Structures are given as C-alpha cells and as structure tokens.
Image (cartoon, rainbow, N blue to C red; front, side, top):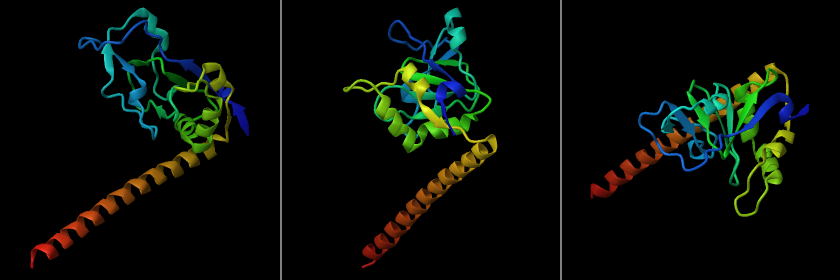
Length: 189
C-alpha cells in the first residue's frame, strides 16, 4: 500500500542558521551537515561541528530513530540516527521522524532505494543544484507494509550489506594472494 510520507512521518527541515556555522570547541551541541551522510546512506556524525546550545535549538533536537535526508544535490541519500546524539540537523537536510506505522530502519531503506531516489529526482526543483522542498517531499508516495514485513525487509537488507562487505574482503584477499604469488614467481628467477 502506497501512502504519503507526511501521513506516516513528521517531515521537517534542518535548522536555518543565519550565517556560517563555526566550530566551538566548548560547544555541547552537534550540528549534523549534508557531508555527514555518505552516498550509500551511512550517517557518521562523529566529526560534526560543535556549537553552543541556544533555546531556539530545543525544538530542532534530533532523536534516535530520525532519518536524515540530503535535500540538495542529485543523489538524496538518507541516514538514520541510530545512536543517541545531542544535536540538530543543518539546513540542507530534511529530518524524517517516523510515526508508529514505520520502523526507522525501514524508512531509511525506502528512502535509499533506487526507485525512491528516482522519484526524488523527479520532484526535485532547480537545474544547477537540484533541491527537494519540504512540501514536495511530504507528498511523496512510499510503500508501507506491515511492521512484520518491514522487519523482514530490514533483515534482508542487512544481510545483503554484510554479504557485499564479505565479498569485498574476499576479493581484496584474492588480489593480495595473487600479487604475492606472482611477485615471488617473478623474483625467484
């Protein structure tokens, strides 16, 4: 069943800073930026800028389970806040907070799926640097199966990632083995 994103998740924009965000070593609030989400949808907020917290930041605080979607560019990767973080998302990210009909990991999987990314490219505005408006994103139709099916999809996706990592490790070991054997053969004569 296809459902509007706004019907199953809260869709927010990142915090609109009034100028350049500068790192404050004494700051206690992390600022997650577009660069913190890889093209494959991995969120790494470990190196985020730190700023001093202000009262206006309170309603923008991220929660574990939020899905952050890059709103500018051509790829639109999404990453999940899977560990607690005291931080906010900067402008250039949309914060998707799933409701009770969506698992956060499933929402991140849907947003990173090639079919969804193609749909996002179709609704993006602008020609030089495409961007997703909050309103257009909220209208996006996404599949919302039962929670049981969502759990199964998440498990299959996790296994696929692990299989890909193991295949890459195996290929690296094969290459190293072949390089060692051929080097030994070349240097023994």
